[in-house]
Length: 94
Image (cartoon, rainbow, N blue to C red):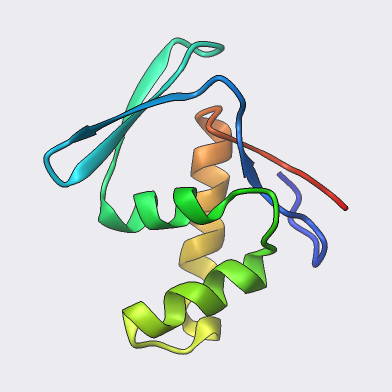
């Protein structure tokens, strides 16, 4: 997904989730893939609700991570790209 300042990633409709211990398993019927999301990936995925930009997500995560948003940007972008590649996220532009 080409992330621009206005791109708002959102969860792909139809993805089914289930909590397993401290992880979230997400299943995409479209790709027939199940993925286990660790705590960090889950936090990012849950913030991808179509209302937040990459910067918004970094800002929200920065407080709990104890790091400035800019320091999180590359990792959050990489996670969003991976989640998109797995069919769990799509781009939503205003």
